[in-house]
Length: 294
Image (tube, rainbow, N blue to C red; front, side):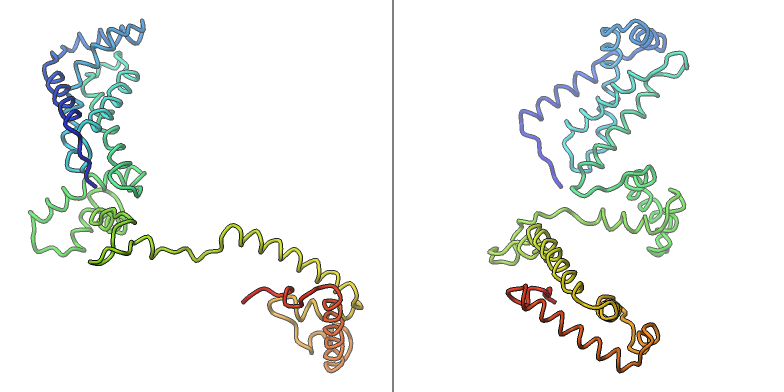
């Protein structure tokens, strides 16, 4: 997924990179003093000096991720966000160099941006997936260089052990990284008259069909309830247990329940069905409206 900057943007990026590299480095005590002034006094000038002195860290980190096809200017902007986050959270009393602390925030911000924009499909969200995404190619190249005799499965096993992830996660990431996004408007075949989107018809019911189906189901349920009310208690029991459940009761089972013979149950069922049909004929314009399409 390639991204190309326009000439004006490229010139602005070059200017920013040159200015960043010309910023003077700070001594340990200088950066601590600036950090204290910002944290304790809210001195924005100190914050500006601290951040500006370490934009070279942002440029250096961003350049390591250029092979993911994203504009260097965007990578630098995200790195600057990470640098600002580091400045806001830095605690001078911990006696840690700001450059060391800021490097982690810068790298994290750039990696999150790469994961969000490398593909239109979300690639990874957990720390393990993130590590797998950014280290898979490097580890595979390292393993292949060390031993060309290992099978693909053995290589995946070593990568999984190295990063502490499951082999299936390695396989899934390999498949994801080996593919590329493709436009649904891309033409099919040499003629180019058809597009991929035309092959992706959705066979599911439309929202209108769903609402209509729900309304019709309610109407049919009302009709059936009214028809059943005209039956005797025994007839209702037979219809409900024989016709209105997925695994209907047998004639023998209903005979035991009702204390009659199997043949008598059959006669009652037949009479009940006739009553239902007569009710439907009187109250429904078309009897077929009572049934759903198969």
